[in-house]
Image (cartoon, rainbow, N blue to C red; front, side, top):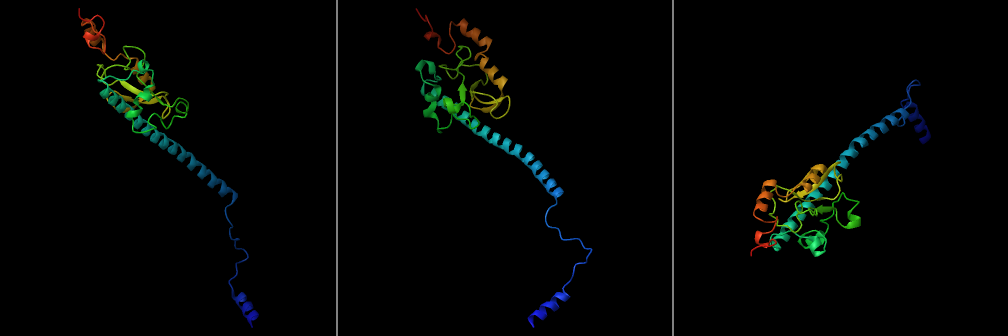
Length: 218
């Protein structure tokens, strides 16, 4: 009896008309091409956003490191009669001099720097220009009439944005600067022309009390 029941059920089952379209089995070739094109466009839109977000995060970390370096210079000056370090005099790199004042081991590493840090151990430089009118090496931390000169900066531009570099100023402020503006700042004297004339009229030298400069009292 069971085979008979199967035949009866099959006879009463709904049948697809002969002219009805066959059920679709997945994407056509054209639909697949359209889908791939849409996905490619979405990837093209998303990847630059991810890259910019990553660069922004690296820049924030870099600026944090520079502010720590600026604070370390101030702590060093507080321990040394308000005078900034002179690496040439002590024959030690400025990074080694400041290391004990820094809370992080990686404070000298900009996360976007894959060039300098692996080879020299530092992504940064500071205002040790080798010129008496522009350098801060060995100078009093107050020995400037400039409002806010650059103190330390990225050793190479363009790690975060083309033509820009991060820096920290003598006030401790971290900022992104145009590379030309940063390099120009390093060439500017720490004292204005009027201040330099006043110091010379008193027989002094920048950064040193008059009585300590050559030939003082008779």
